[in-house]
Image 1 (cartoon, rainbow, N blue to C red):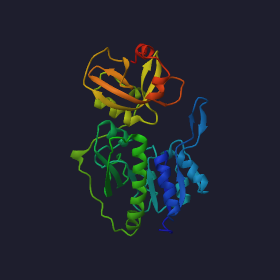
Image 2: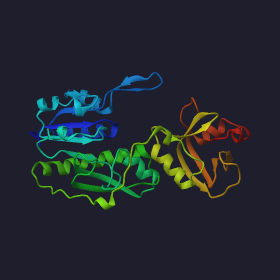
Image 3: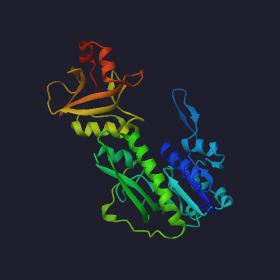
Image 4: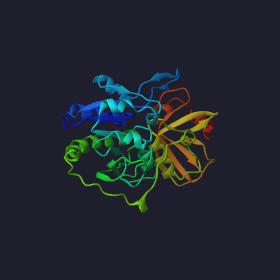
Length: 311
């Protein structure tokens, strides 16, 4: 384990957790590849990825190619035994994959062949799945289509959102890495081909897909909110500005008011949809911080709340 040279490719927080766990567990990470720094915040300041921060913390050689498939010569100098990816964000070419002496592997946050693609956690939540999991698979040129070397599942709690489920899956990934990577290095894991008839996809969430619809059934509305919380957050519009919703629950199947109307019932903030009602539990008004519904109710009269139509 200490001698197998691993080049790690990843970008977001979930990947940073695995990277740090591998480092502190004694795996030999000889280089890290991540996405370029991205502008964030109101000032659009260039910000390094969470994986960047871990590589710098442990003084591991770090590379941020714009397009790895065209800027991969540095991999030859790193001389990797294994390319290991987890949520890197670029599809790798056959040339890049060929730098790995062992078959390159990927950690994918779903029970493949279900939810191939960039957003498996979000799709599992949006579709109301009761379980998901982590798959260790061979990287091939076709997206998430390689042989499966190991797979474990976890339950999805009704209260899970994208943030909490990502944290659970990150911990599962590290547990699996400790368990299965030594076996992989010793050629003791047999790869299993995926069932192509059972394939489903989870493409990247587009900006316009973050907006909620009042036409959604209450349970679908709630699940979409879960799938986008806490970042970036699903939203409706209030006076053409984003009114974000981070936690909602099904309230009733009643249609008593115009869709988009907010009311207070039993000290709860209720939003009318076209096909029922949902309780809003955590929200964020335009230009304000996230708050719970009780704080929102205490800061507004019931009459003012009724006038605040969401669309």
